[in-house]
Length: 385
Image: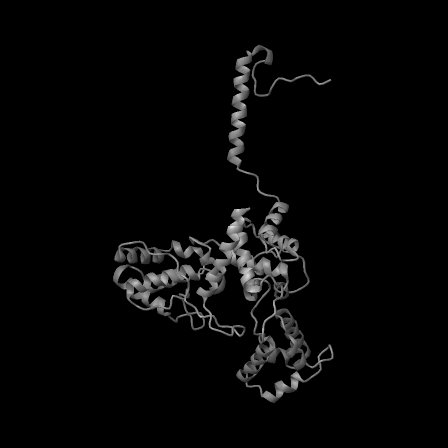
C-alpha cells in the first residue's frame, strides 16, 4: 500500500507545518500553475478540429467537403500558416471566384484559344502554316488526329496533357509547340504554374508524387497547396485582406508598390501607371522605368542618393524588405509633409487583365473587390457559428 509523500515544494516535514500555512502554500502553488497555463495560451486546435471548422465554412452544397477540408488543412500545416477564420475565408473566397470549387475547371472556348496560340507561335517562328496543319493532321496515340484532340479539350488539365504528348510525339514537336500552351495557371485557385515550380525549388513539396509540379498544379491538393502559398506565405503590412487578393492577381507586393508609386507621383507631379511594377523586366538591365526616372528626379533635389542607391532599393520591391529601405522611408516622409496628413501605404494596382481565357474587359480592382465580397460573406458565417 502506497503511503502519502511529503510534497516536493516543502522543506520541512509535512506534519511540522501548521495547517493554515500549508493551505496558503498550496494556494500559491495553484495560483502560479494557473498563471503558467495562461502564459502558454490556449492549446492549438488539432488537425481534426481544423478540418471540421474548414468543412463548416465550405459551401453547404459541396458534395466532398471532407476531402476539400483535408487538402486545405494539410496545406496550412505544411506551410506553417495559422488556419484562422480570416486565412481560411481568404482561401475559400479565391477558390470560389476562380473555379467555383472545381479542381479542374472548364474553360469556355479553350480549344479555339489553343489553336490560335499555335498559329501565332508558328507565325512568330516563321514556320509555314501548311507545315503546322500537316503536323496536326497526324494520328495521335489514341487514334484521333491531334487536330481532333485539340478541338475536344475543355479543361486546362486536358490541354496540358495534350501538349506534353504533342511535344514528345511529333517531329520538331519541341521546336513547334514548346511553350505554346496558352494557359499559364491551373487548379482550383488558378495559381501560376511558374510560381508553383519556383516555390517547389525552394521548399519541399509535401506530397510524394511521380508527376511533375506542373501536373500537380492541376490536382486539387497541388492547386490548393501552391495557391495558399502564393496568397498567404509571405509577410505583408496590409490593413485588409483586400490587398492580398489584389496581389494574388497582380503579383506579390503589387498593392504595396502601387502605394509607393502613388507617393512618388504626388511628390514629382509625374503621372504614373500605379501598376505595382517599379522596374523594367523585359529590357536590358540598364533600362529605367518611368517610376525609377521619377524617383531619380526627386532624389537629386531632396536626398543624397545615387542612381545606384535607388536601383538597389528598387530591386527589393519584390520583398517585404523594400519597406525598410531609406528610399521607401524618404518618399513617404516627403509626400506626407507635402500633403500634411498620412498617405496610404497601399493601393489597388490599376491593371487591365490580359489572358487568352479572358473574353471581356476585367481589371485587378474588379477581381479583388469580387473576392473581398466573398470573403466578407464567409467571415459573417464564421462569426455566426
